[in-house]
Length: 165
Image 1 (cartoon, rainbow, N blue to C red):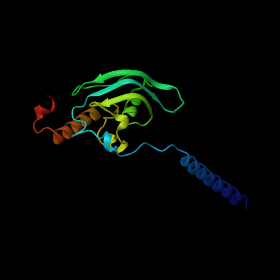
Image 2: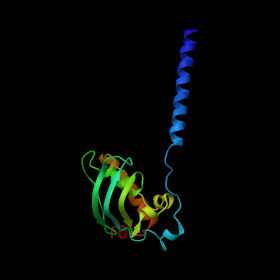
Image 3: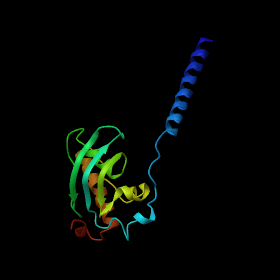
Image 4: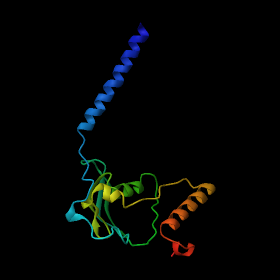
């Protein structure tokens, strides 16, 4: 009888936790529009060049929280290869999160001259991608490099030498 009572008590706790979560979800602020409004749709193919500009950019994880990234100003030119390195907590992943609009962005990020704040989330996230962090063991590095090579070659380049130019 005691076991049954303890089990029922644990079940009740689990159900109440589920109810709390559902109530928290009802109070979440809705995400921005998934589709881009007609007046903000880029003309033609976007992005076409790949120029990325951060202009007076700040990032927060909470609307009233501290700035995680402060006053970023930099430009990545088309076809420029960029690696972001730094210690733990330096903001490497936060820069990527800001491009996917996963946190509270202040300031401007432009991709090919278009402010991403005006682009719908689906339209934005379906047009950009990243190469995630990988622990670099020699075998894994070789396999990763080969997979990247094959994907790039299959998508855009018919000849090996075109991929590197």
